[in-house]
Length: 105
Image 1 (cartoon, rainbow, N blue to C red):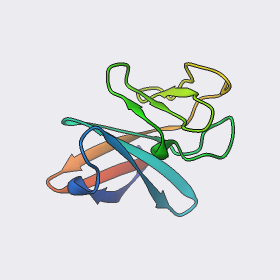
Image 2: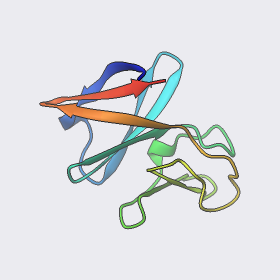
Image 3: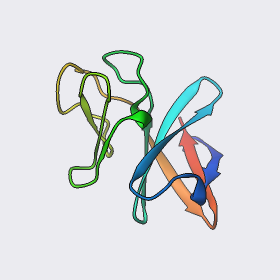
């Protein structure tokens, strides 16, 4: 198991949305869908664009890069549309009361 760090408060991420958080050199996009939380690397693998600024597709559990439309799985980071061909990193999250923790590798 990796290092667990506090990332944010529950209230920092609105339901149905994504928000970027920086931990050192890591950029992490956190997505909140109801009671479910997801965290993926915030850099699109096609270009250095923030995924947290894109649209969240709750029905397919994907986040879309706003610049060129590549969609990435929130569960395994796999790209589901071009132009991206490489996955983004996926992180485990844990909610404890009002705190959201991320597990870093």
